[in-house]
Length: 114
Length: 119
Image 1 (cartoon, chains in turn green, yellow):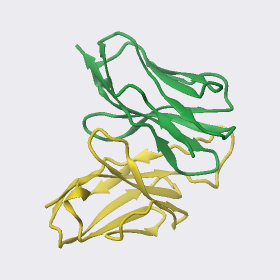
Image 2 (tube, each protein chain N blue to C red):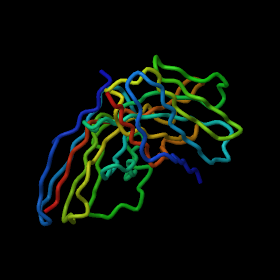
Image 3 (tube, rainbow over the protein chains, first blue to last red):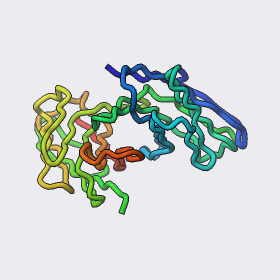
Image 4 (cartoon, each protein chain N blue to C red):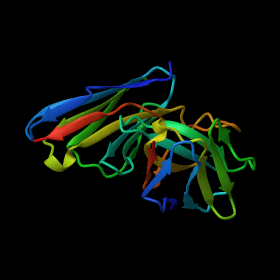
């Protein structure tokens, strides 16, 4: 079974600062996909960034980047130059290559303080 | 078009009512999903349709009945719900399992959800 753990239920960061959200997972699969999704107070879930386990290079999308440590089964999200619009719930998700099912972490509520 | 639409946005129903939630996508995706989400919690998977066939049913009570009329539409029929069923119901879609190549992530695209209140 796959499990995803987000150990920080709530976090806050000052506007323009950098914050890192942690995610760890447990799996016996050798290849898989990892995702970070954002759900602002308006509630629509949107994809922030994605990573395939076979790719050693950490994914980046503008101000968002990940630190993927496959051996440690860790997939943390770094948000640089935090903006008020980054205030949201952030969910880490795992998916096997051979399946359609997401395994979500419990989420981290991030508040960006002006 | 990279959008998943859901109707209605809000729904209030009594425990004896029958209602339906609708979801639509025009991205050519062949996998569609229903999730239930409580406040500040992750989405809980309810059903997965793959190529219009029900592939996953996460032991959901029979008062929830999914239907996939075609590859673009997904319905969730509701009957005799309980107050504890009040939640945000999310629909999602993805390309589906059969198109796996390197760099193909099969990420899910979510709709805005239907806020359901059961009185």
